[in-house]
Length: 396
Ligand code: CTP
Image (cartoon, rainbow, N blue to C red; front, top):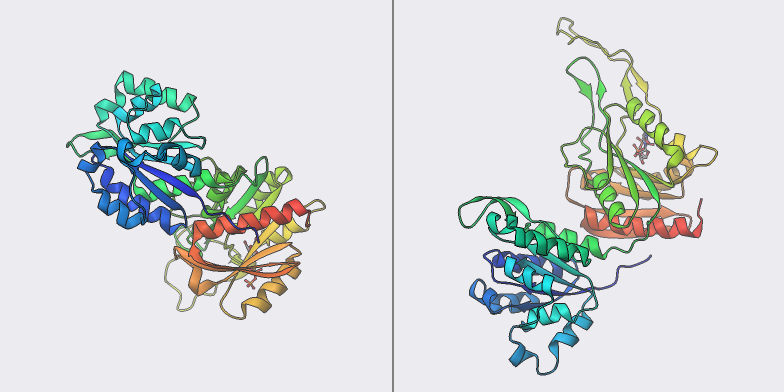
């Protein structure tokens, strides 16, 4: 299985109140297996102590170019880095970057880099909307710098508006996204996710406990890897992944229709939806009254969407999911064979449903591969690395 390589980041912290969030960001990056070398401006040390950052990263913090830079830290540290991330980036530091100034260690590091630069602006809303800042940010974007955020909301000064730094969690996710190898560049992916809802009457229906989290995580990971993604989703409460085309459906029949329309264009089909296996034969248009002592529901089987796609004369590369409650290996192997698909990801339903993390076992022609317990986005990335490798090899 293809593995993600360890990445090294220089985390630059400049002097804004959001500097306290940098400690959490450092922790989250380390948790993802990313090595962090912190560098602070002198101003940043007034907001958060280098001791905090050093304790979290296990590395001395670079601050003073006259003390720390005798051995050319600005060259060595930037050469060793896979990316430099400035969080928070003050208006002043953004102005420096835009003009190529290098009057302290961190700005010198940025100028001497040969790796991507990501900045997370954090400032008062008025400073953010100032024409000079707008110009400077546009300059950075034109120079290929990745600008993360800012967000809108309550500010330290008591005002409300644009300029808040993104939360550490979001930044950690965006940074990891920037590192994803573009293994699916140019590929069109169609993904189904979430449950389906089969109406019994005007207000009741049959559905299941699928949250949609795994399918949405796969859509996000696929976008990060450069794919053009269409996500067909049953009812969920999740925010739509950025940069994916979203199609909302309710029932299995609607999901099948949406898939049929788009499948001729797809290179890969990933069927994550927990499609209801049965639907009421005759849903009532009106709410059914509780007059009867017993109520018998007649159910008809729903079409199997994945089996339909896999049996097309020229099917896209198909990835299926299996949620089992027992005998994972036997059921998954049988399901992969029956549906005639090259790759199937299996999990135990009681561990997976609604949960933020999971464990997957992948089944393909070469055997089985365990993706150990992790959050669903990490699993999604690992699954797609595996799928992309098989797809490239030309597995059916
Ligand atoms: N699937 C589908 N359409 C259906 C049922 C399932 O596309 N009507 C897809 C799911 O998205 C998943 C795979 O088939 O990728 C397996 O779904 P699962 O419900 O676990 O298996 P079933 O084939 O329905 O078998 P069973 O319910 O008996 O376990």
